[in-house]
Image 1 (cartoon, rainbow, N blue to C red):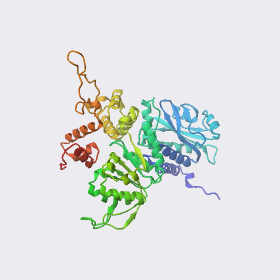
Image 2: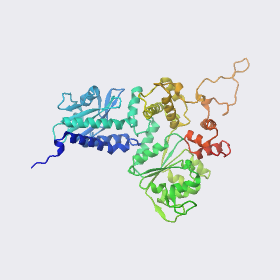
Image 3: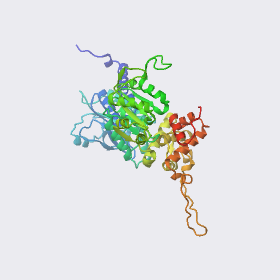
Image 4: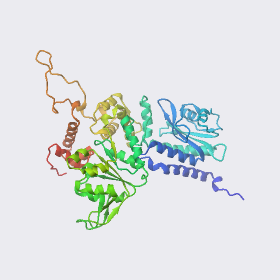
Length: 529
């Protein structure tokens, strides 16, 4: 007796199974789309799931390099060679890219590119390839599966299933920074398509060096210290360490030391026992307990009170602590990533930061360069990425173009607020423009515009007069960074009518950080808001 499933006879049930297959593939990767994952790992996971769903021996994901009009494999079951590159129109995948139509081989009469099998030694007997299209129906890639298991060819039903899967995969890929990079390459053909971690943009040498450090550190439990100016993207790096580590399925818990009053930081990190202080009417777990098995990200580490530094040192050394008001030792399994824009070595020298904690926490150190040191290429990549993100967020039907004048203006600016300032700048420009972003759409201060500085002449002789240079009479483009930051902060504070809470929110820094900076500038610590 032979047993047959109802799906063998009912097309509706077969359709439900296809949808279930599609959903299962996306469910397995859906959580990765919005995270700082290694994009190659993400694409490989996609290909693995698609090949398994299609009962294929191998799978390949091709992306379209628009500048070179080539397909390149970035995720594939290719143990023999590192990458395949095909001209549009070449082979099965190239034919799909050229025509936009799916291909089943050997059923469809399409010239098979046999050179790949010669290079790999692999024998392809059947293949199914379908296009990847974005929401505007523009082709940006091809997904192919090879050699149907237990059959000599892929069926029409298989083709429908893979086409449904490709639509879902396209939606997932559009939500990553990889898609924005492919779009950027259309307008900047001189720079090749490049990417590494999702949501972290940059292909210059300093950033590539950082990617290597993240990749090595992520697989370990080593403590990581991320240093860099405000707005450089330190939290993105911290998240990349976590989501590319074996702890990725466990919590990532953030503590912002600059956003909390010093008296509450200890309680926030370690929790408290009932009755520990007035109002403590129940036991409260801290962030370390909440992150058990995962990662604790301590932002603005330089703001950590000295009274708490010893307790943090103990967690780093022994992974244990007591809650505030308690005597029971709590053991936790956590990884610690910290970030700061302060000079911790100077703080150690000045007696404001424990030396033993400093050396314990900088096991792996990542130093993020400020945006002005990353070069014009990264500024352009980031600007175009943020334009695409803002257009999608504000549901614009067309992504605005970046004019040459606007790009030149962006690349000439010093970016004291770094990547965060650029992101806000591009979002503002996207909202204000009507199709093309011009230099006048950029909400940048006038003080950085570079113009020739007249040289004072001696009376009647054309001899330059020696003018003493100080921060007060330096041309704007030559001001020290600290002075630029000071002027910007005071200008924002003035615009907020002295309200420090509103100013800190506008600057996207903690209120404690703003208060510290104002104190350094000689302003009294008096403001109620």
